[in-house]
Length: 389
Image (cartoon, rainbow, N blue to C red):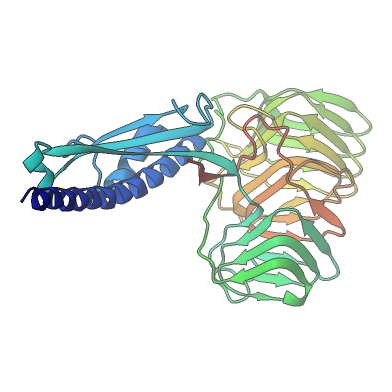
């Protein structure tokens, strides 16, 4: 008789433990997803707790409901990433009702799971955002591009990618199709991928303000000028071998855009151009061409770290942005709703260049896009959330 009681006890224990483990696996899935969501919110400079709570609720665990508690710690309070503010820890706990163990006085048992997520540098550095057009990404015949990071094309068109040259990258992903595949030297060329969307959609534009610091700023001849950050109503126009140096900061182009032509030189470090429009000042594109030299680098810290050109998302102009120069551009070229024609020679090797535009046309020979973000305090401005614990 005693043996029978013991056997029933073991069966009861095994049954309840099995139920607990099944529920814990479900809870772990929710914690993992919540941690990734919280890390994504952190990367996008948003609140982590609501993001974690929302995703956990989608997985059946609502904070405060049925005894569920969801704790979000940034930085984590335990584990190998303790104290590291680049990571988020999510702990989900809930008392689970027992069945057979009630006979032994255990009406419930606490079950908890934990997950840690953080951000890593995005694996791509060339994103084409237009969802429908042909030749969303076009590499002209006889040209070549080597990218040390992935290339992504969101267009679903059957000829979303048209390649007349040589494109080498770790991977090339296209929502639609392509032509000229023989010239694409990629470890993986994949069509039919899901669209990725704008990887810099989280960026907040800089404050424009209500006044003009400069109006229709034009620099001609062999003049050597140093410009300071501010609001440039009517844009900046540089030509005729002028030499312009930019002090660090944000250059708000309120209409007029940026024009650099005719052997001019433009240099600056720690700079961001925000291209927009304003009352009385119509939008103008970026136009850098005609044997000019530009050597520019983006800020290494702050809300616009890694962002060199930032086009106002409300702009819907058909005028292309043209960047064709010798020199080097370190930073992101972000034109989410307009075309970019990129023919920079990149005669100086730079640590990284990121291109995100509505459509992209490449007219370049022997250019390499690098992806070394070690100079940036928080790494690449394009980040992916990854589960670490």
